[in-house]
Amino acid sequence: MGIYLDNAATTPVFEEIIKELPDWTKNLYANPNSVHKFGQKVRNEIEKVRQDIANIINEPYENIIFTSGATESNNAILKGYLETTDKDEILVSPIEHKSVLNVAKYLAKKGKKVKFLKVDENGNIDLDYLKKSISKNTALVCIMHVNNETGVKQNLKEISKILKNYEIPLFSDTVQSFIKEETNFEDVDFYSVSGHKINSIKGIGLLIKKKEISPLIHGGGQEDGYRSGTQNTLGILALGKAVEIWNKNKDEYRKKLKQLKNTFENKIKEEIPDVKIVSENTERCSNISCVIFPKVDAQSLVIALGRQEVYVSSGSACSSGTPTPSHVLLSYGYSEEEALRAIRVSFGIFNCLEEVDEAVLRIKSVFEKLYKFSF
Ligand SMILES: Cc1ncc(COP(=O)(O)O)c(C=O)c1O
Image 1 (cartoon, rainbow, N blue to C red):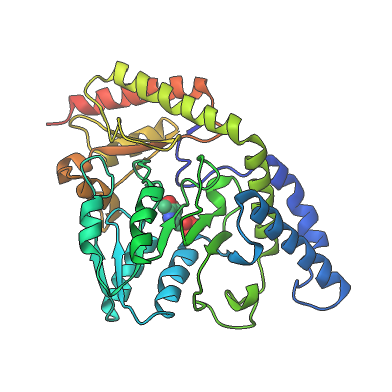
Image 2 (cartoon, protein in one colour):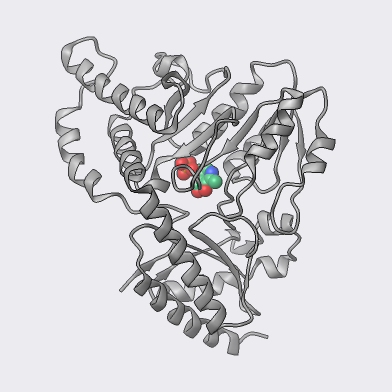
């Protein structure tokens, strides 16, 4: 039995969506921008999804833009907002996803001033350092909500309170928390969402904007001019369905995720007492657990676990055959060596407690074999 515990990377698609896809493909193929009845029928479906999402997340309808995913949303927000202001400095947390960090690096190359913030050893943004970093030239502050490697959750309310004093907008990548966590993004000016993290299909996301941005993609003027290109009808309908299902069942889903994660963490500590759960006693999301194992490197563990059909991730990136330690764990103050021993286990609503029990047994057995041969 394969056990998929990599839900922070992507999630299985809801059965309800899979069932609808052939019908949507067959009957809603017209271009939503065509003026004829057939096109307008598709357009109405798309606008209905926008309105439904707007109602659920309590945002004005016109603030919601459909994109191809959070990578695009993050690019569009960072590049697009800077084009609307004379200020040219951004403050970016060091633990962002690459789809933010690499945009910031690109902007720095283009002459923008990029200052990186600091986090403490638990992964929380250093608020004093944030205050000290603000200048008259600060255009935007960029701090993700839930970290995708460790699950640590930032206090966006407190952060936005600080920024309001300086009238600086806050952008937050909310990919790992959107609808999955009890959230309130009332005080966030821009945020990004990815469909495939909430059991929709891939290639669809949201950009939510409460302030003006310049478009990233120019063309036919779709999405009110903010994102040209014929809309991804199937993606939008799938995302709409996923948000609807999540919203209907959110209490049950959140409770279940928390139970899966807590059970896993208790059992893994029982079976392998020397493991360390990253930021164990810090505010974290319901479904991500980052575990550092003694001696054994994460890359070997993930590969060996894959052979036992337990699917998890390591935080390290692997380019040209050599794993590089996670920038997130390094920012928390972990050594390179420790960071290379961290794996991420992330739960989804289709996992069950039996899978958690079985996964812990397989992890223990694989770990013990590798441990024996480690120096
Ligand atoms: C925190 C975070 N931001 C952005 C992304 C990118 O999302 P997408 O795959 O929709 O481009 C991911 C995906 O892993 C993520 O975890």
